[in-house]
Length: 383
Image 1: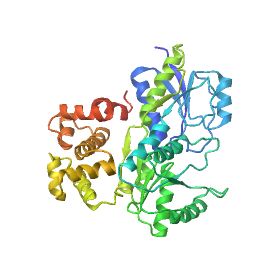
Image 2: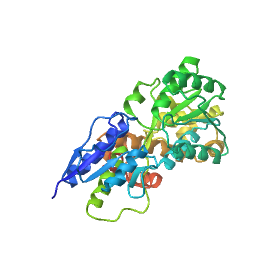
Image 3: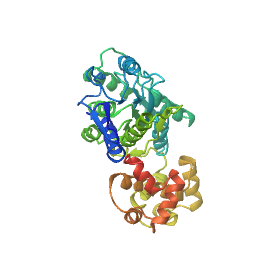
Image 4: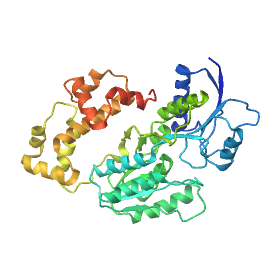
C-alpha cells in the first residue's frame, strides 16, 4: 500500500472539529496508509495549506475565499467538511445535513407543546448562508406557529456588547418559549442573559444550542441541550471519499449530507409547555416510568381520566397516542445508551422497558428507519 500525505485543515478546539479529525483517523487506521499534517487551531482562525507542504490530498473546513482559491490552484483531491459555500465544484463536499438538523430540533420542541418560538442566528461568520436556522423557522411556521428571530443591531460582536442586546431581546419575548441558538456559544450567551434578567431556564425559556461542544455545554448553567451532528461519522465519510478520489473514482455529483444522530437533551430544555395539567401529569408519568413495563392502563391510573379523553388530549397536543409516546420515550433512552455506553443490546433493551432485544430492534427500526446496531456505528463514526 502506497503511503499518502493528507493535510487536515480543521479546528481542534471544539468537540465538533476534534471528532471530525477522530473520524478521519479511525478510517485511516483501518483502511489506509496515511500520514497527516495538522496543527492545533481555533474555530475562527483562517487556515491555509502551508507553502512547504507537498502532499497528496486535503480535508478542510473551507471557511474563506483564500483557501478555496488555494485548493483550486493546488489541484489535488480535496474534501470540504464545512457548511460554507466558498469551495468550487472541484472540491467534494461532505458535511452535516443542516436542513434535517433544523427540522429535528423544531420537532423536538413541538413535541413538548410549545406555542412560542425564537431563533438566534450565528455571529462572526462572514459569507455563511444560514440554512440551518431557516430550516428551523420554516418547520415552526409550517406547524402553524410564528418564530421570533434575533436581529443583531451592532457591528461589535464582543461578548458583552452582544450580551446586552440579547438581554433586551429576551425581555420582549412571550413566555414560556422554546429558543434555538445557532451554536453552543450563542446558547451560553443566552443562558447568561436569562440569568442576569431573572428569566428561568428551562421553565420560561427552553434553550438549545445548535451544535454540540461538550465543554461549552457542560459549563453553561443549566447544562445546555444540543444536537449531535455526527462529526465522527462526517470525518469517516470524508476520509472514505478522499480515498476513492485517490483511486481515480469520479466525485459524487451532489454534496454528501450526513444526517444528525440525535438530540442531546440536558437540563436547559427539561420542561413541557402544555396548558393541560392532566396531560402534563400523564407525560411526566411516562417520562419517569417508561423504563419499566408500563402500559397505557398504568398512565390512566396516574391521572384518573377515561381512556377516550386521554387519547383525545394526546392527539390534540402531540398528534400521537399515549402508546406511541411510551415507545418514543423508550427509543430516545435507547439512543442515549447506544451512543454513550458500551452496554450489550440485551442490557439496553431491559433498561428501556423492552422485554427482549428483538422487540427493541423492531420498535427502533420502525421509528428511526435503522437498527440499533447501525445507529450505534453511525453515531460513533464507524460506518
